[in-house]
Image 1 (cartoon, rainbow, N blue to C red):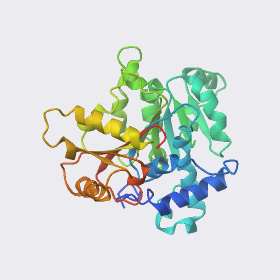
Image 2 (image 1 turned 60 degrees about the vertical axis):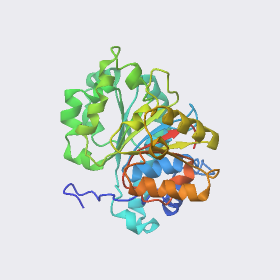
Image 3 (image 1 turned 45 degrees about the vertical axis):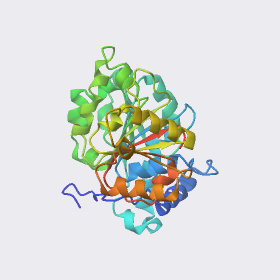
Image 4 (image 1 turned 120 degrees about the vertical axis):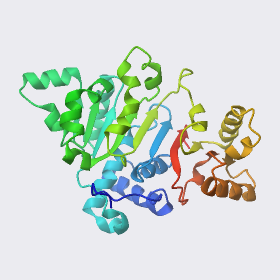
Length: 322
């Protein structure tokens, strides 16, 4: 256990068959109107967040990407109340978990607030309009934010001195913080270059929150101006790119390898894993990815991540509905 009191995650306990089963059981209990529970593509992403690992998800509007921000909190709450669901993980469950969600426009908050509150979570929206309205009503939204489950705000408020001093530096809040989400993350690149400079500063966020808190990014569209997945070849650490189809796996693999024209081992640097690949080649991919530095990126269907202890994975990228 770390000095801060949280249990360090050293392996992907949640991103296993057992972990997915517990998540699904909790979702069906907490959100009974979801008759079939969480979508299959949501499970590995929620599990990744619970395993305290960063993620980027690209999926269409209406597919349920906003649920990636609050489902991990529901899992924490239910497991804290009912540790018998998974005694091994109950010790790290938070009774009152918290999340910070960065939104590009305040209008999105208007649709998210009812969706979040009907799940039994408390939410505070920090925008210039809500802060001014609270001040006129002699209320302190920043004080309320420290005890809320979810804080919705723009990058300007997130980077403000008051939010930093009164919320981010609060020992109690930091102990509750489970994730930081960035919705419509493509705006970081698109708007950060001059229009809203606060977006270009979001990269410093990781240094201002506890190191174990994952950053969960989501987008309904990756524009041509966004650097797409090129960064996976140069980032520090290994990356898994999950694709919704085997055909997309092949396209993404070919694209990434094309970015390595002078490399003699590009077929080892970028590997593909799916059921169309020969089993012995899939086994080689697992071995290279887990035990060597030569394999940096694996492009795979969702089956690749289930049950593997990939402790060296730095990022997981989801293209479409894996």
